[in-house]
Image 1 (spheres, rainbow, N blue to C red):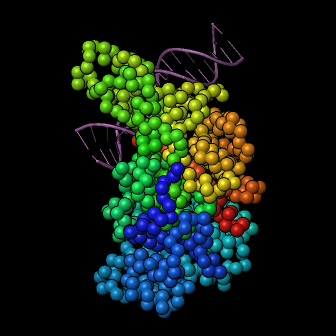
Image 2 (image 1 turned 60 degrees about the vertical axis):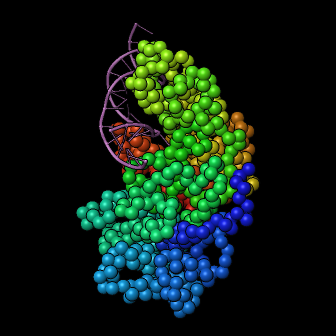
Image 3 (image 1 turned 120 degrees about the vertical axis):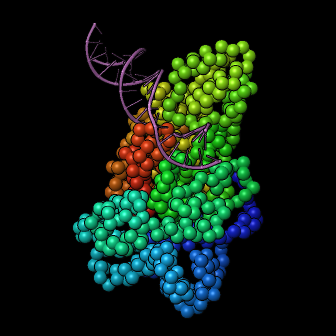
Length: 587
DNA sequence: CTTATAATGATCGTCTGC
DNA sequence: GCAGACGATCATTATAAG
């Protein structure tokens, strides 16, 4: 199945190559792009075949895409040769500063060049110095090759001790980065007032300028040419697309979108992160910034099934030639729940359900609704209709009899979310917990659509690291796609959920190994390294971290990404980054 | 029968985007 | 101005365990 996208169609894709260039440029600013002394930045070899072409023109495009004049770029390339892009960039920056009027220069040095300054130039001299001063400690070079700055590496070694393991060092740096990002969230320029970890105090002005510099650049680049941009002009809030179809849904196969990932984001390993789309302001900005500046894909599962589910996905998977699971699930309430058709009143115009949540309406409520409806013969008065409809929408009630509405059964929720029937049934789980586990889960068809590109890439199967596995939405999706699961490391706090996944694993006669843990915070570098050594690393890292501090339904602790549970996102990042580091180390 | 644990029901604002 | 959101708390009631 899968889109009719042949190679031929691929050719007519891209009139706005702006897109690609912009994001591509952006990737340059990422620290992990630091080239190894040998030369080329590590490129994901498995990444979608991006436009092959003369490297020279590519380089030219690359810098032009950044916003430099063509002539200027050509001149710089001529002067320094195409091999040294760092020097070319430096030259271009010098040119552009020289060209500006003093006034503009002032402004620009804050908003523009300083970003480049910090993200590009500051780091590179340090790398050089690495050779001279620090080469006594092999870890420092490894860290730098992993993409950390020399400052981060040397501070980490200083703090953790010369004989500390690589895992300890990367953990330390991750923690420092988190602290930094937390500060960044508090405001761009209030650093002087906020205490910050001592090790980041080295050069305040530098950090000040540097904060979010990469992201700023991305935003600017996107503003310049991206029609589909998701950042607004005046703030850093990510805007949700309308309709919420992400980079495409099965019903919309006519358009092919291309994207180029930042170098640091490229797989392997592939990663796939999920959370609620309608999070408080700034949350997705932060998530995206941590996850290697990959633009989130916002998708409403109403394009995949009969219920809405607005979610953001940050992933580095190819986005062309996706295909949906077959058979396509029913798209309307009537098709999904045919028994309701008979009782559905004409004045209930819903064709799809709202988001399936973790709680259901009480029996008392449906009883009140029944009574309200029985007061009138035939079509109820408008105010009753409105009352009933409001409650039906709020609680996702469906018609199961004359004047009788009811919440969905757990079996029905399972079906709507794309799980096999009885997936969460039995094994000692209560009805309430089924709703809870299901409400917190992926919509399988949606996720499978995104993961479908892996099928051809890994005919022999994959090793999966599944964080916050829940009831195994990712595992089910991959299985239904026919992607063999070789080794699955699943981390899930809830025991009933782990039992559900284990039980599914056995019932589906999986031939691989399922290893489960209960706490992401205990999954450290050492454990990961041992696991990865035993079967050769992970191909995919999936996770949807807790949303309860982000979700609108939460009246009590909607504390944002720093909330008690939702801050576990940082563990997703930490672990993903460790996996990337360990893979790099053994390559 | 007593106690522990689980399920149920009612109530609780806010922010975002249109 | 309105609809909508992978929710939490607390009191009450039901069921299980001892």
